[in-house]
Amino acid sequence: MPVIDRYGLPLSTCASAADRYQTGVDLLLSLWPGADARLDEAIALDPDFALAWAARARLHLIDNQADLARSAIARAHGLVERRGTKRERSHVQVLQRLMAGESAQALQGALDHAERWPRDILILGLPLGAFGLLAFSGRVDHDQARVDLCERHARHFAADDWWFLTYRGWSHGENGDVLRGRTLTERALERRRENVNAAHALTHVLHESGASEEAARLIADWLPDYPRHGTLHGHIAWHGALVALERGDVQGALALYEAQVAPANSTAGPLNRVSDNASFLWRLALQRHEVSPALWQATADSVTGLFQQPGLPFADVHMAMIAAATGYRSALEARITGLTARMADGALPAGPVVAVLCRALLAFAEEDYRGCARLLEPVRADIARIGGSGAQRQVFEDTLLVALMRGGEHAKAHALLDERLHRRPSRRDERWRTALVAEDDFQ
Image (cartoon, rainbow, N blue to C red; front, top):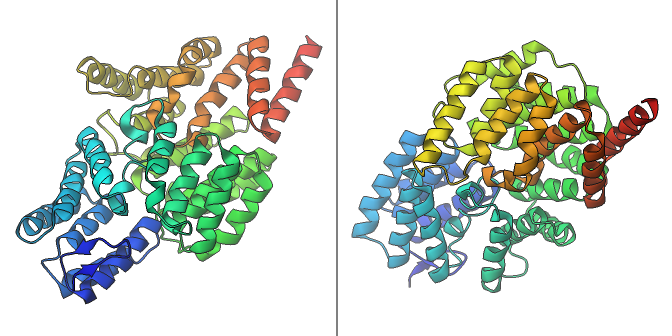
């Protein structure tokens, strides 16, 4: 009798290795600690089990261990060619492309694979998420594309499947359907509480619906049970710090930041470490809270050696934010030059918006607020091309808003605030509007 996973897909291994593998994959896809140990146990039980090596490669990549990831996927490739089904060979091939940095090919491979084997969730999951292949494809419509992908394959999953509920809910919430997104992500977290992706997705949905108090309660209730070394521990704490800023509790936000997000205490991977630190400090400055130069310098020191070559837009704009805030103009200009060259070579799918955002951040840091606004206004609709989530990208629209206010373009600032407040309630935006009205009355 063939060994199968919980989705009914055959596995070329023994039952005991398959059991450890399934547990490891569930931990990997819920981002809960322990996946490495379970996958290692599967490999110990069957050293020729290709998919266990492939999952180990995926986990190495998540942990930013690129050399180990490439070594593990090479081992998986050699094994699956000798002992593997057609589905397993395709599975390994998609991950090989991912490990090789062939993002476009990996995305197409994952989509093609999902057409034949939609219940192969490790592969179906690759295009999904804030840092997934669709988000980093350079497409402006990646939020809708994730919804389309989930709905295309929804019939293949049970109504109570915690993994599919998580990503279906995330996708709808990010695409603007916050009611459906909330229903699905709440159900996902109920089905599996030790599911970091569900807690994270629900936090985003609450943010997008303006439910800041509920988001604060969720984080305060759930985060203490998540091991401190977990991949997204600091990032979820970052969400908590943003909620505090939304309420106007600057000291509370700073306390959360310094305890769990700042470089000295961060357990996040490089991309979250760069983006969470940079964007939190930048948001503080946008709200006219003095940011200690030591905080910015600690962030700059912590990213030394990271993302030196331009080409990952989400990293590029946050590295530019750090350079602008700390006065490293030459480093920022070098990044813009590199981005321009990549775009000219057709190697930057996100297009010109990346370099424009970098220039706008520099203009803002140098207090050229009108210049910043002139750069940002025409590219608002293209900011989604850099990837990440709506909550992460909002800092750029915030920068435009504050640039309009400080640059004296109050009519445009009022219009943007009205648009934002129509989209979702925000105590921070209400404070900005009150300040703007007071300034108009004074003049």
